[in-house]
Length: 220
Image (tube, rainbow, N blue to C red; front, side, top):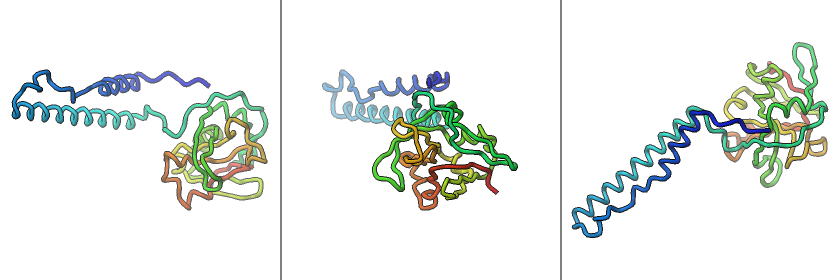
């Protein structure tokens, strides 16, 4: 999968940041070494003010960048992996119908990679998959207040809307580049990126790490 070119807004803001990054306001004036005490004090004060203004300008630009949403979430990065098989990942149940969704359909939404700890496994784990919000849009459930995930062992969890709107939840299809199987808690599992979204690291969210997903359906 190729990463789309940066927008003009992102390019402009990046150039501004590069310019600010090259500013060296602490560089002394040539006459500072030979100036009197009062002169040197004035030069140092000017240097400090320049440093402060540069830091403030950089901070304001970064706030603008984040407000515009032109930078991706740090926890995710695009992943380019071989095409997956056209096998069923899970079924979507809605209005009395059950529609299968395949791994290939899911991964065509765009693969991302995340490294995160897990509430149930040791160490830092690396997963690849698709954004959960994109999956819900694919199956027509993006407007729901909640959705229900059911595993093959009938374990059930309700995922509220704020989870997929407040953070980049990942519906993982792979781990370390390898497709998830029943033995590795697949073919899909829900992953919360805890490193960059620590607000998800709570007892309330812990049960929502659903794996061995069998069905997806709208909440009540």
